Amino acid sequence: MANDDDGRSAGEAARGRDGDRRARLVDAAVDHVAAHGIADLSLRRLGAAIGVSHRMLIHYFGSKEQLLAEIVRESERRQRDLLTRLRLEPGRSPVDVARLLWRQLTDPATAGQERLFFEINVDALRGGPEAVRVLEGLMTDWLEPLVAAETAGGADPAAARRRARLGLATVRGLLLDLLTTGDRAGVDAAMEEFLRLYYGTE
Image (tube, rainbow, N blue to C red; front, side, top):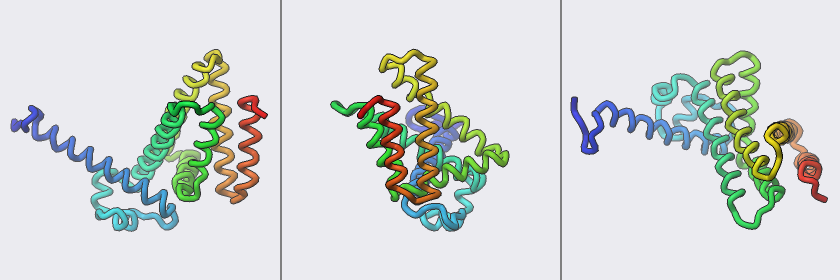
């Protein structure tokens, strides 16, 4: 069996290159969806936009549904990374972090990502197996760091989990409200009221 310079087999090296290429394609697809939305999104259109053939997308992802699931996973991962970075910035209160994250989530430039998230929800309600797996993973991926933040602030674990789930559900509900009504001022005001109640601020 042939080995490359660092001792990996040729097959392992090829799989590594495939994984890198797949990750780059997901990144490009997320950026495209964020900038252009998901209207009339097909593998052919998306492939042309990011510089690959639709056959190459099928090779790496298997189907349009699986690619869309990966776009949602990566979009949500980026949002969690942003939340982590904001929390680590010195001098920011939890309510300041929440406001900054909300501003990012409701930026019109990223509306396509949020719309895709809710389309995945609809697919899951219809029994789409890939969509169901995505949503199950995202619930855990979001809840655990939110619970950790609550317990770090002194909440007992059971209360922390309830508060984290309430916060996550409220943000998602208001995002859906914004997408369906377009009432930015009304949704922003509702978020401010929620933050006042949640954090006990005036």
